[in-house]
Length: 354
Image (cartoon, rainbow, N blue to C red):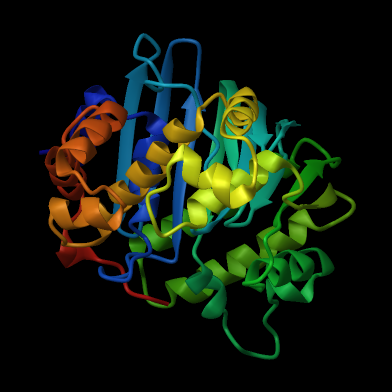
C-alpha cells in the first residue's frame, strides 16, 4: 500500500497530524531499534480549503493532502515535549505557540529552537506554511571535528542553550527565538537551507552528511546575524506549582494516583487538582493517564515487547484498563496502532549514522 495512503488511514482512525508527525519523528531514536536518522523534517501548509503535510525521515518521504472538512485533531492540543531538539521556521503566515505558560507569536521568516524539556503546543496555525527540523543529540555528537568547522557551541547563544541542555541536573527548560528584521529575501534563503538539507538526507549521495553539516552551519550563521535577526534566549525555571506537579508525574517510574501526588508534594488533593485543571485543562488523573499512555505508545513502536509487558512497564497493573485508556486516547487498540504505524517503515531502508 502507498505510504501516504497508510498515513491518511491512520489519520482517519482518529490520530491528529501532530501525533502522526511525532510517530515519524519519534522513531529516529530508540535503544532497541536501529537509528534511522539524526535529522528529520516536516513541512505543513495550511490553506482555507486544505492541509498539505510532508514528512521526511532519511530515505522515506511522505506526502499527504487533507481537506479542511476533516478535523486536524480529535482533542484539544496538549502541551508536549520531545526527546530531540526542534527548530520551527515560519515560511509564511502567523503561528501562535503556547510555550509553558505564555503564548508567543511568530511571523514570516521567524524561527525558534526548543530543547527537550520545553513543553509547547500550537494554539493557532491558519493560512501558514511551517517547516520543522527535528535534531537528535546524535547529530551534534557527530559534528565534524576539524579546525575549519563551525560548531553551534562556538556561538554565545547556542553555547548557553546547549550547555543548559547538557546539564542533567538542571530542571529548567530553554528555547531560542529568532525574529526577522532583515529584508524580504531572507525567509526564502533560510527555507532554501532546510530544503537542501532534506534533499541531501533523502538522496544520500557520497558525503551527504558533510554537506548537511555545512548547510546547517550556514543556517545558524544566518539566524545569528544581527543584520537579519534579533535573537532572544529564554530559560524557564519551574517555579510554579503546576510545573512541579507536571515534572513529578513525568519523571516518576511508577503509576501515580492523585493522593500519591498530593502526599509527596504536601498539598491538599482537591486544591492541587483544582489548580492543575485551571492551568492545563486536565485533571491530575487525566494528565497521569495521558503521560503513561504516551509512554506506552512510544514503547509499542520502539521495542518488540508484548502489549502486556508494555502495559506493565507504563505502570498499568490491569491490562484491561490499559486497553480501555489506550483506545480512548488513540481511538484504536494497541495492536492496531503498532501494526499500522510500523507498516510505514521498512528495515531494509534504515539510514546510516553519520
